[in-house]
Every structure is written in structure tokens, then in C-alpha cells.
Length: 245
Image 1 (cartoon, rainbow, N blue to C red):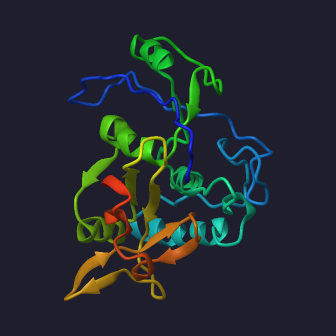
Image 2 (cartoon, rainbow, N blue to C red; image 1 turned 135 degrees about the vertical axis):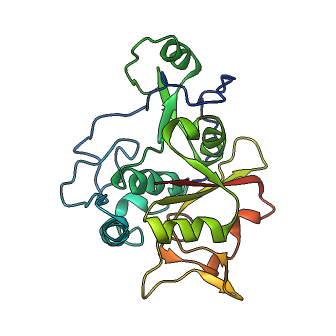
């Protein structure tokens, strides 16, 4: 998502060499106005019983249900993910993808004051603009580095590694890049399991561009070679690969 205003996501410096058991997800309850056929309430979860969750029974059911999820979210056609004059919605799509894969990725995150209370053991209610605020893709890059481990994310370092892991275990992969220019958002896209019809791009048998799905300037249910190694674009100062079972 491109955004010319800065999020007030937490910048609190926390030393946590091991996961902090007190940190909690910033989540709203599903809102009936948050729908695939609507541009409203994109920061809230959808309450749509027709959207399939990832089936965690085994690796095969995970992969198959991810394919069903991508088909249902249909980022190319659904109103929720279409770019506007002001914005694109890579973060909204990635949030939805992760949520229905039963993995936590924030679309809002705690403010500094709220986070301090949580780490002190207090219960904090998510209130937009008070205890939580929007978190965009450049900030999500930093969130992964600061908090990802606390929510089960494991950092990876190559396209080959993350694609193979997603293919083999049916887990959730993410590539997230941070913009060089402060106040502008970067980009985030899920790495998804290969199918008979959709493949990563390889050279000499090694994954160069993983198979991904995204909202952005152009939305793709599946892509690999068309955007090449977009995360290495000169617009970005840094990128991360993360995986969740």
C-alpha cells in the first residue's frame, strides 16, 4: 500500500531474545461491513462464512485449501483489493490471506502507550486511533523484525528456501520490503504453494522468483517472473522473508 502519512505503530524498543508471552495480537471483531464486495472497514476482519480457512490436517490439505482461499479472495476482481487514486492494498490482502490461513499478521498495531500497558500485564482493548492504529507495509517490515518471532514467524533468507518450505509443508510465506523514503509504504506479498498451473521461476533448478499472490498497482492471484525480484528495487531500503507453519 502506498501511503503518504506515517502510521503511529509502536516504535517502543524492547529487548526480547525469546518470545514475550505477554504480547497480544491487536485484533478487532469481524465487522459485517468488511466484505469482499465492499471498500469499507478494510482494517477489520471479514465475517464471511463462504471464505475457506486453511485446513491444517496435513501438508496436502494445507496446500489445497490455500489454493481454494486464493480463488475465493480473488484479488484480481474483488472490490476490497482494488487500487484507488490514493492507495493500493497489499497490506489488506496479506492480512486477509494470513487470517484465513490461521496465522497472525497485523493490519493495526498497538500504540506505544498501549504496548507499555500490555507488557506490564494489563488488558488493553483495541480502539482505533487511541490504542491501535493502521500499520502499513514499511512498518510491517519492522514489525516482523521486532515482533514476528513472538507470533510464530521464522525468518528465511532466500527465495529457494521459502518456496521449498511453503511447497513442502503448506505453510505461509511473506516477502515484505521497506521504502527508503520515510512516510511512504513499501510492499508486502504472500509466497504461495506451487500448483500444476502456477509455478515459481527457476534457473538451473533453483528458485529465483517465488510464486506469489498480491494486491498492488496491479493485482495478481498468482505471479512469479512478471515482477522479477521486486524486493530488490531501488525504492526499498530493506526486505525480509518470513515463514509460518
